[in-house]
Image 1 (cartoon, rainbow, N blue to C red):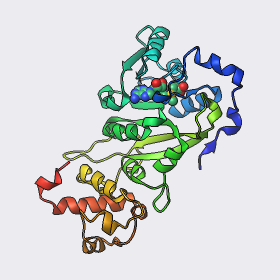
Image 2: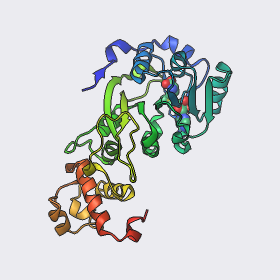
Image 3: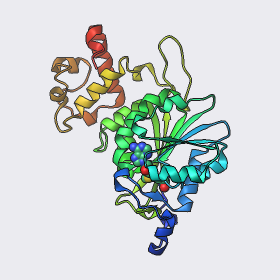
Length: 305
Ligand code: SAM
C-alpha cells in the first residue's frame, strides 16, 4: 500500500499561489498543474535517485519544479516541453549547455534515441490529459530504458498496478504489467500543486522487465526478474489486439469478445472458461492465448497490424 504525503504536504496558502507561477497563467489544455510543495519535490527526487553518468529526460518540465533539483544533482538534463512560453523561460533560466530543451509533443518524441552509455531514466509530473496514450507511447522505448518515475492521477496508478479480478484491472494493467514491474510509491494531495487538480495523485515507478531477445540475450533495464518464457509474447502486436478485444466490452464474456480469435472449444482446450470476463484472466493467460494463436496462424495473418 502506498504511503500518503497528505499530512506533510499541507495546503499552500491562497495568497502565496500567484508567486509560485511567476506570472505564468496555467494552461488547462496542456494539463498544467505545477508542483509547489517542496517536501514532495524532495521525495520525488530521492525516489528518482539520479546519478552521475545517467541520461535523464524529464517530460513536461513546466516551470522547473523538478528540473532545478535534478540539475543540482546532475551535469546535464534533457527535457521535452510543448508550451512555447515555458520553453522560452527554461532557455532563459538555463542558458548554458546543461539543459537540452526538446521543443514539441512528448507523444511524438523518440525517447530511445537518447540512449547513451549510462542508464536512461525518464521522469515527469505528467500532463494528466494525455497520460494513458503517453504510457503506451513509452512502451516502444522500454528495451533501452533503465527506469521511469511519474506523477499521475492516483486512479490511473491504481489501474496500472491492479491485480486480476479487481475492478481496476484492465487493458492498461495487462499491457503495462507485461512490459514493466510497477510500484506505487506514495500518494500526493491536490494542495501540493498550483492550480490544485480535482483528484489525488500518486508517484509510480516503472522498471522494464528484462526480455530475452531473438538471436541472443539482452540484459538492459533494472528488472530484477527476467521475464519467463511463458510470459513472452511471440507476436506482441497480436497480444495487444487480443487484450484490446477482451477489454473492449468488460461486462461481456470472453467467448463473445474473443469470438474473432477463438471458439468456445479453443478456450476450453486452453483451460480458460469461455464464460469468464476479461478481468478474470492474468497477464500470463493473455500471453498464452496470443502465443497459441500465433502458432496456429499462417505467417501472413500473424503479421497483420
Ligand atoms: N514539471 C512541472 C511541475 O511538476 O510543476 C509541470 C508539470 S505539468 C503537470 C505538465 C507539463 O507538461 C506542463 O509543463 C505542460 O506544458 C507539459 N505538457 C503538456 N502536454 C505536453 C506534451 N504533449 N508534450 C510535452 N509536454 C507537455
